[in-house]
Length: 288
Image (cartoon, rainbow, N blue to C red; front, side, top):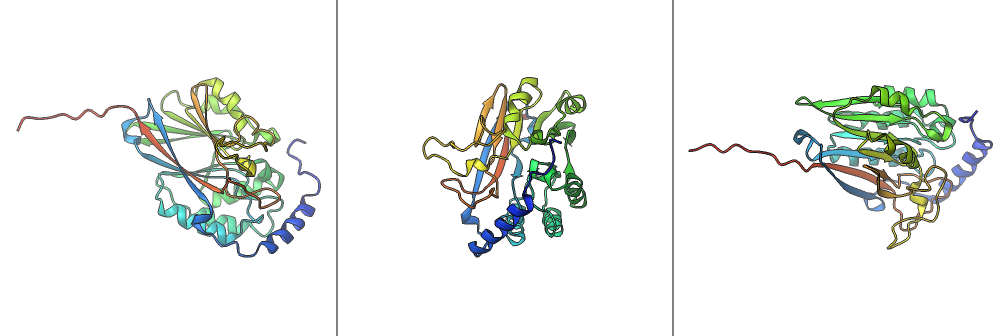
């Protein structure tokens, strides 16, 4: 089975628990991560969605360096930014979920966004039990969009938020998404793995794809702003923004890390997207 848990997950978690304890204080501190502001200029964005704010969180890997207390700090910080929408793009836990269900649920439930919270799953979520993660998302009032579509409506205009389940484990079904996706409206695709953009961009149905998975390689080369360390499904688009066909692909460095807490020129990231319309707003001038 493609989504079968890799061997030695419990051993890895034991090793990870030991390393995390040696790190000491894991309290959330804003100066230790990057809030990345990304302006997305959109030709077809309705005026009613101008300056629309979307916050993306990804690769939390709760229990592996990221403590429940740290995640609570992230939630408090995000809520102060008052986003219109929050997107979550997978890998919420690492090697085990046991003992972290309540913390994840409570943190996700406290996240606040005007128009909703939306999520897809990552490969680690499948390895630890997709059904358990989905139950946590549902109880947290997070709309799970694995191979599904949700439309946000304002004054008769729409933003379509779609999601594709993790392609690392063969759970993706883009055809199902395309059958549900309306023809009109600005379209966002949530996918854990960034290199899925090679497929999604060819449909010409999506304006923006948001992903994680790579952790930015955990090392970003200064000046070049890319990384030599690239895992499967994040080889082509490992960190930052890319233009892929007519679509923008954005790959977040994520909050957590895999294996070692080692980041060089690659701080943990919370991404704040600002959608900007290029349409001029006509104002009628009446005689006084």
